[in-house]
Image 1 (cartoon, rainbow, N blue to C red):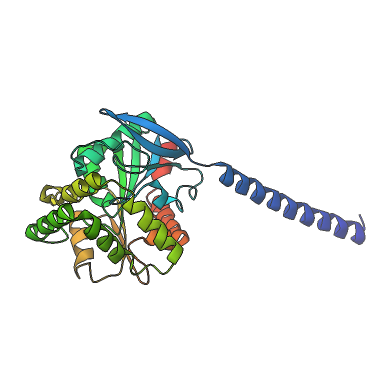
Image 2: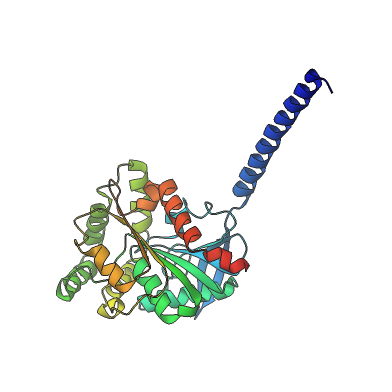
Length: 300
């Protein structure tokens, strides 16, 4: 074979390799786009709980929204973890789930998650909880430790935000004048959000949650029993927005509960950090999943 023939073969090989790589990327992109979450409803006590599911597997990454929010708050995450079973839940009273007149406690929410997992045929989960979702997934771990692989704290707390007297006063004010107090509270949470379109979307969604749900869930979130200091013996990822709201010893406190803690506090983000910086959040969460080999365990 002469030099020109050899060069031609190398050229063809290189072109075919590039073509193959491009084809692979296109196929992967197409698969990601086609993996749209599917809506399902699980039976929980006498109600239906809506959830979105994508991917396959008996272990899942489960997203739990915050106070008066819904699955749409995780829209930047639900399609971002190819190869992983992903579920996002509308907690009872929220989104497309039923909204009965009941006590919306953290225990009630946690048990509804377990009902969804049974309906979805999921055995174990890494649970990510935003805001109120944090004490919800914490309670899930208490009730179902064998079903909990890891926890992800997204700008949520594992201790009371204020003394009981203050939280009781706030809940009473919310109940007495919801139409004024709720918008003021939500606007305060949205002040750091720079994207006006996102700010409007969040406000509209939160104010759409029924008053009886919002008031009861706020009271449930203030229950001191939710914040007992029992140990968390599984890996925990915490991603918080830097704010005067968090006490200086927040990381130390979390490590006292969860020795297997990966902790981040981000600058220049709001309470809705996973919506403002979805790619950065997803990269951080992906690293946590890989480091702890959660879904490798499912394959073994």
